[in-house]
Image 1 (cartoon, helix red, strand yellow):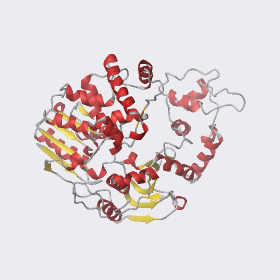
Image 2 (cartoon, rainbow, N blue to C red):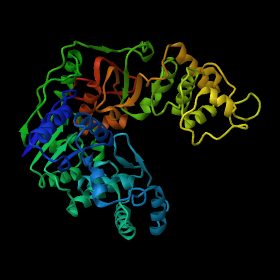
Image 3 (cartoon, helix red, strand yellow):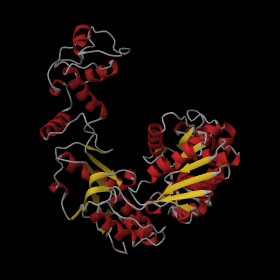
Image 4 (cartoon, helix red, strand yellow):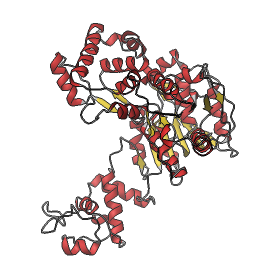
Length: 504
């Protein structure tokens, strides 16, 4: 028997899975936790589920709280350190088969997927994940005019042979071979979260697992299906049959933001109809401000763009605000710099730190003359030191610096930036209150204040004319991150996403 838990953002789908249905299976039905699988789309989602389940059921031991890829890897016995195709393997592959002019590097995306940079490999992996032909995949990815079809077929065949010869695997193999070899663990119940993000190959794995179980529970929201470029399709979830346990009250979205969200949903043609209500707070929707006019002095902020390039354009503006922000393109304050400042502050307040933390501090403690670092001239090693205080560092490790963070030596541009942050009252010991990101990277997250940029690049605008539902879903996700205030803005690109309008 299958139960489907559908619900818009903030309605508590994961909470319902864990606190209602998992509780019922463990406590009421007394199912052995080792016969329960809780699988989800990304590593981040699996980690969150694992933490929540451990907190709710501390006395129970679960074996299968993981991603689908992890379940496949474990049951197949794959050593990801040696058997997973990586950059060094691609070099050997290219030399073996004469594809020396090709580049096959992979990059791990924040959502848990691995993506090939090379267009041939993008097509091949997309074909495997969607269970479609190479040619159809190339057409779908709009790459058919940029590749040689005979070469595509040859590379695909060569990869298959290479993996067979050297017992190597790609990420899609973790799922396909799991099903082919009938490797399901002994299960009574399977839970699936973030179901709207599954590709056809992953759905095949889930349906296979269902045949081994007594009951299944599936949670998701097709309106948040935004990974179509990786082969995911909301159609399967939209048409999924089962006992309905739909969630209807959002604990996140206020009334004003809810109205904007509904105006977007009205334009999505293919969706699972879900009735839902906002929380009681009114909230605010503000349009047509400039980023420089925003007061970032208080609260949590999320600044969202459609693409990485649009995000890069905003970095200099935010750097000039005097407030700290997280962004993969903001390299002014690397983690080790923040850690050095905070650990130095702890030392000055009488706390103990580890030897590793002390060594990191010493990287920023230098004499005015020469390159001799404090503590490394006649001092003892800190490698194996578990705990040490300021007095011990002075006596045994040559530390002579004193004072606040200004005792540490940074590059001039870093020092200027830190001074601006301190002047604005930023607490560097806490996580940044401002996050700059693409919409794709924040699904599942929320913030008090969300700034959503509606700019579209030409290629995206043209693609939206063919599949407008994809773009509507993406901006629906962006809008519904806001708990209090939603700011709708643009950078002045030629093409814009017009919220609430049928034609993009």
